[in-house]
Length: 262
Length: 266
Image 1 (cartoon, rainbow over the protein chains, first blue to last red):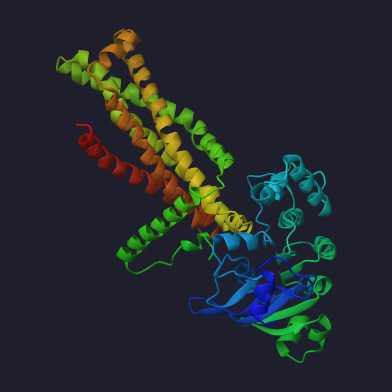
Image 2 (image 1 turned 180 degrees about the vertical axis):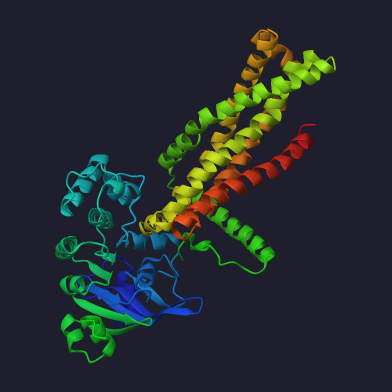
C-alpha cells in the first residue's frame, strides 16, 4: 500500500485490519560511524504480531524507539497511524503516542509509585473524562488481566522481574492502544515466566486485536506469539516471514540463528 | 520531533575545553527553553508541584533552621569580642540582625539547599534517566520537561525565600540566645535595638533574591539529572555535579545580586 494512501486513511486514528497501523519506509540510523539501521522497511496491520530478532546491538530497540518517536531516523520515515513521527509537532506526537503501548526491556516502572499508580499513570494524564473510581476500576481490571490481583499497593522494587514486566504490560494497555511495542518481554526471565508472558501477550493480542512488534532474542517466544518473524543483521532485515519460511530459508545467517549452527 | 533528554546527551570528551564549556551552556539554554515552554502550556502539573514543594521545602526545613541557628550563635560569639574591644557593644543586636537577614541567612540557605536538594534532584532524575523511566514518561505522551523539571524548578523558586525566612529567623533568635547567655537582654529589647533605623526594603530584596538561587539549583540539578547516561556511575556523577555546580553558581549569583540590590536600593 502506498504511504500516501496510508496517511490519508490513518490520520483519523481509525485503522481497520486491512490497513497497516505501522509503516516503516527505508529507515536508516547511525551512531557515529556505526550504522545500526540500514534501509529497514516493513508494515504491521492490526491483529498482526511481528517479531524482530537479531544479534545484540543490531538496532532492534532503536527501531522501537524510532516508532514511538523517542529517536529520529537519519532518513526514511516511521508512519504510525498516519503520523510521521519524525516530523510531527508535539500535539500530533502526543496523539500518536496515546495510541501506542510500549513495554520497555526492563519494564521502566516509576520506582517512586506503587504498582497501582504505575498502571494509572497514563489514565491520570490522558483520561480526564474518567472519574477516580472509573480509573481505579480500570486499573483493577488491567491488573487482573495480567494476573496481578492483590499486588496493587506494592512498590516495583518489592515484586519480581516477571511481575514487573506484567505491570509494564498493564501500563502499556491502560489507554487501550491500537499498537503494542514489546522490547524483549521475556529477557532475563526463567522459562516458566517467559511462557506465562507469551501466553499473556497472545491472550491480549486476541482480545484487543493490536498491531504488535516484539523485539526479542527468544526464538521460542517469537514462534509462539508472532504471526511474522523478521531477522535482522547489519541493520537490515535478512528475512521476513512465518517461522516455516525461516526454516525453509537457505540463508546461512538464518540457519545459524535458528539452529545455533556455526 | 521528540522532546526527550536526547537533547542533551552526555557528550564524549571533547578535545577543546572552551567548545565543551560553550556547548554545555548552549544545551542548558535549550533545556531551559523547553522547560519554560512546557511549564506555560496547559495542562499544569499541580499535584506534582505540591509534592515537590513538600519534598524540597518542608523536608529541608529542619536542616535549614539548624544551619540558620548555628550561624546566629557563631555571629553573636565572634562579633561580641570585636565590638567590646572597640567599645561598640551596643551595636551587637544590629550587627547580628543585619548580617543574618541581608547575607548570612540567604547564602547559607542557598548552600544547604544546593547540597540537599541539588543532590536529591540530580540523583533521582539521573536514576530515572538510566532506567528509561523518563523515556517511559515520554512514550506515555507526557512531557517530562513539564512533569519532572518544571515542577522541581518552580518548587525550588517558591521554597527558597520561605526557607530563607526560617533560617534568618532562627539565626536572629539563636543570636539573641547566645548573647543573652553571656549578658542577659530581653528578646524584645534585642529586636528593638537591632531593627532601629532599618527599613523593610533592607530585608525584602535579600530574602527574595533567593528565588534566583532556587531557579539556579532546580535548573542545574534537573538539567544534570535528565541528561545522564551510563548506569550507577552516571548517577553518582550527576549527584556530585549537581551539588558542585549549583553551589558554585549560587555563590556567583550572590556576588551579582548583591551588587544589583545595592544599585537598585541604595
